[in-house]
Image (cartoon, one colour):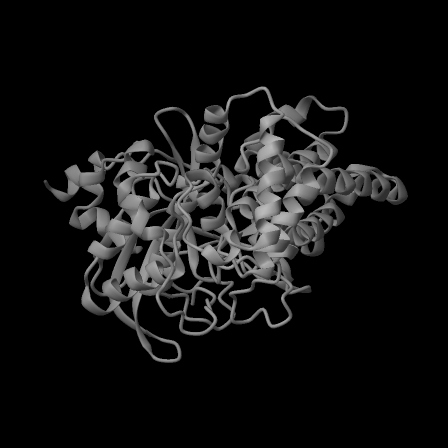
Length: 491
């Protein structure tokens, strides 16, 4: 296959609607070549769904594009500007190590951003080298694919390329570039940026763009900008409820890490919870627990409040009226998020209908899990399958009493016991990306150039609700946990 053939056969179909926005929001950039690009992992099913030829994408030319050495056919690289609150403090940010090639139009007419992460310095690098290490890029690949398998909206990883260069952090690490696919890279921080550093006209242009691209139904509303906020809040309520139900901890819920599309974005110090605790924190830099598991619904509301502040000039020409409108919608978010979480918890317990005491029943279970240091995922899995891994909780007198109340509650609904079990199997995953499994896969890839451990893990994570024999061993906890698990921002 010649290079010319490779160019035409990959299937790039790029458009550039983002560059129609005010130039305040982006900077045109050039690619930053790496010395020896090598394909580490390619998400072939994702590539095909995007209308890309995975074989051509894995060719020498395709890899050079994924590495940021050559611009794809029709590409127009740019870096996006945004701002945000990092741990509550506002700062100017932006894609300091990422470039957007454009928006791929799929055969079905969908539009997805194609972004390289770790591709080198941009005007927003703030002194950084703009590069990324192999380990965190592979980690994002694994976790984002696990989230996709769980049915949680997420950005996805198309490929990870080893760059052949070492990058300096605490030590010298192998470098990598990841290709990230997203319905949107518009963040709450994008609106904060234009609100703080742009004009009202530019803010309006950004809001109109977001409506046109992501929420076209809002154009028919009496107040399209209020409708925009409502739709973003609804998507966040749904997303956070799904995080909580799966035991996922994002780790760094800064406003620049909240996509208005409702996708999980920017996997850094994230992890899935083992032992249930509302205070669970894995991030090495979250010393105060701001982004702990139990705080995530509240923090999402806080971020939405910052989004509302950015939109105030568009919501109403009287600021007092605009603030009141925003406050009403923030209250609606809180109620919706709690309602969606409660509905999801009912499903995890095999409950089809609603009863007034359900929330008390659920809260009691979570309290018992915390007291007995029970594994979150495996507790619900044991209730689903009957295979108990943690006898400590299941033999406790209070839990036996709780289980009797739960079983009586299930018997009161008209649906059969079999239907209830089917609901639980569809709501409780047999496997999650256990921290020790993820670390083992990353270590094998980084130190032994062995990607088979990662491939096997991805295979069982693809359909976590299959409850297959192959998945059973991946539900096991580590034999001897070596202290508290810590994760780090993807440097």
